[in-house]
Amino acid sequence: QVTLKESGPVLVKPTETLTLTCTVSGLSLRNSRMGVSWIRQPPGKALEWLAYIFSSDAKSYTPSLKSRLSISKDTSISQVVLTMTNVDPGDTATYYCARMRQAVGQYYLDFWGQGTLVTVSS
Amino acid sequence: SSELTQDPAVSVALGQTVRITCQGDSLTKYYASWYQQKSGKAPVLVIYGRADRPSGIPDRFSGSSSGNTASLTITGAQAEDEADYYCNSRVDRGGSGEHLVFGGGTKLTVL
Image (tube, rainbow over all chains, first blue to last red; front, side, top):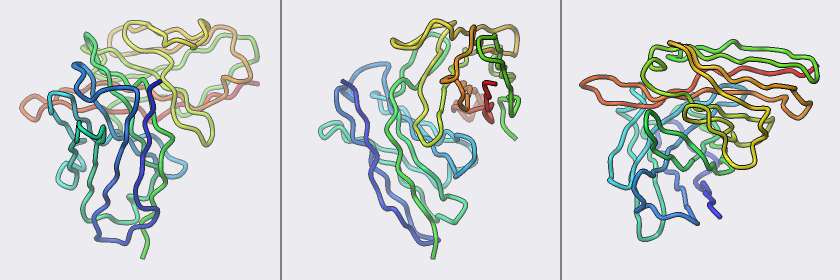
């Protein structure tokens, strides 16, 4: 059974760095054509894709936040970490991680974590 | 503005058919995937690839694509289908690489 679980701080102050961890089970981060994405959703708003990392260590970031994001993985402990620097209240959102599969002509996100709500406030 | 455009809201009578669309240039090259999100819950994948459904997704959900538009069709909508639906696609940025993008979402109301 594939599960993903997000963890991190509930409250972060403006200008601080946010670090979120996605712990996966039931799958190996070494599997080819498989990776992990981070997605966020501000309260009452739409989903926003943030970043991915593949087993090959290939990475990608959403252009609007690329300068503030960093994604990495530790295959030995089945974790993917997302860091976001210089947060502000606009970064308040539920943050999800999801397993990402690669197929001909696309990527898709077939298993999602439950999400973790992060509030940015002083 | 999103690179994938969805109608903000759509309604359908119980048992009828509804189509939710997603438009974007990337859809001429890549398939869309579709996600259902019920209030307070994580999104669930309902359609991916040409028109594939994950295990456990009812066959009343189907997908199609034409030109720069992808569609999610629910044939015989049920009350439990009331949710927000999001499309997602890969986007190429030439020398800047690729990334993914979600549409703005469509709120489906089942009347």
